[in-house]
Amino acid sequence: MAVDNSRTGPLFQGQQKGNDMTTQTKQEAFDLFETHRAEWLASARVEARNIADRHGSVTINEVRAAVPIPDNVDPRVAGAVFRGGDWVCLGYVSSARRTSHGRPVARFALA
Image 1 (cartoon, one colour):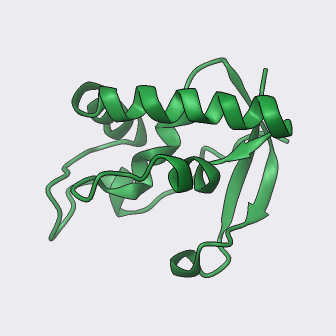
Image 2 (cartoon, rainbow, N blue to C red):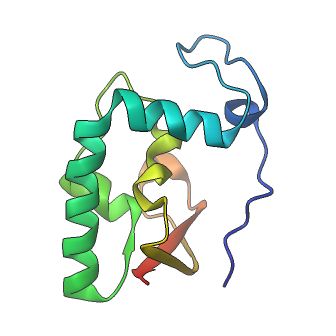
């Protein structure tokens, strides 16, 4: 299943209000995250690979459970963990995180 890149919202469409992140596009948000949170991303990517190796696939929620997102980081950019050609989106599953109210999250496998 292909990744839906058509998603829109305030994170990707312009300036955030009440938030310290200002971006114009999803790509720019991910670029900023790569630059300013490289250490967290590296740890999260190692954990994502470990989970995928053990279970065949992984979601960002499984990664977040093992490597919590820093408090001052907007969690919507955590998908940057799966950025690049190492991952393939298998489809979507309902999030089990209480705060996510069952919204879909992507399930990835190593390419």
